[in-house]
Amino acid sequence: MYELKPNETEFLERCAEARKVALSFKNPLVIHHFDADGISSGAIVQTAFRNAGIKYRAKWIKKLDDKIIEEVHSEQEIIFCDLGGGNKRVNELSGDVLIIDHHQTEGVEKLQINPLLFGIDGGDELSSAGATFCIFRNDVDVAITGAVGDMQHPLKGMNRWVLEQGVQSGRVVIENDLRFYGRYSRPLLQFLLYSDDPYVPGISYNEEGAKKLIADCGINQKENGNEETARENWQKYGELNENEKRKIVSALAEILMRNGMANKAKTLVGESYVFPHREQGSETYEASEFSTLLNACGRHGKAEIGVRVCMNGDGKDTEAMMTAHSLLLHHRKMIRDGISFAKENVQDLGKFYFLDGRGKIDEGIIGIICGMWLHPMAKKPVLGVSDGEPAADGKPMIKISSRANRLLLAEGVNLGIAIKETCEGIAHGAIGGGHRIAAGASVPKEKINEFLTRMGESLDKQRKNE
Image 1 (cartoon, one colour):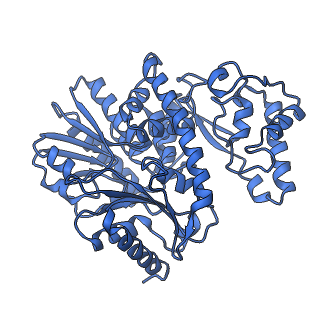
Image 2 (cartoon, rainbow, N blue to C red):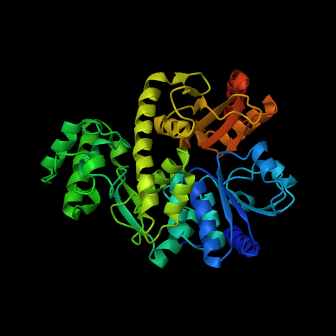
Image 3 (cartoon, rainbow, N blue to C red):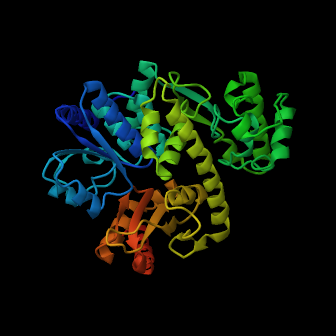
């Protein structure tokens, strides 16, 4: 049983106050971010309003910039989800504002529910979706999905408290099993073939090797068809009995040990979260798959579909699920292509690794590619750039995403602060921030070289503790 600390109890008390404020709104505008955590947070709010019979409007955005601030300036009631805490211009809004965020914040005077304001690590212990659940207490599975999608797995701190609420309600089951993606949605062959965390020599991206492992474990598996056309007919890993699962895990561990990767073998099995009230075999049944589905929706311009999937607990919105699945297949291909490009094109710029994805990698997935490319033992962060959306005045912009690992955090690296300081040091038009381990920015095209130089200087100061 997770025991709440005094600051966490205070946080929940403030959440209860925010709930009263939110449910007093008459016709609020819900503005949420377009990633998995933002979609999850926005969906939880919208479900709460739907249940309370409150009319609302919803809008998803990629960033809270000056253009958006001007657009919503006359709104009387606004709830920001997974953004807002890092932009002081929200203070200019004349209406009632509630901000639900977990990013680094400073100088915001509006009502804000942010774990960082209560000494809770928003980058590791509570996402925006989790904070939103703490306010409204509905859709706990969606809250957990948002946290997992924001790289907060395995869940700890306040996330653990949220998880316990889900377990106690029967809407969440904790499983300790093979950590590969797609345990319940991918056919067994594709499950092994496309899993690379960790990369298993002779199995990952090796169809014959994956087939042989399955056969050596005495498991019958259909060999015709593919994931797109036969996904409902092929046996999934999640459908295997415990003895068959043990054989698969043991075989994978043996391969890793044989290749001098004992440390990787230890990471094969871990905690995962499934939602028994959702359809088994669908991408919404397990948290990591659910979060990837939501990211696919958001990153490809259909965040509203992700919200519909979140609010589709009874499975009746088949149109949303079909659309989301199509987006997911497209998303997976773009990720595979992006990783292939990154493996050949990442440069070492001294203070950080650099991936120039302009013209090659979509801005919606450049951060995902950086995160997947970066090794857990890497000694410097990675920074990727891609073509961004033009500014309000038509000027070309560059989307920047950065990723670090736990080792770098221990050395003092804070990407959120580094990005924010770098943007502030450039000029009007650059905006950015985020977490210690992941952050992003939007920068005028003509300022990209200055940004890279300043970013390197900022990271250097952090590691020297200046």
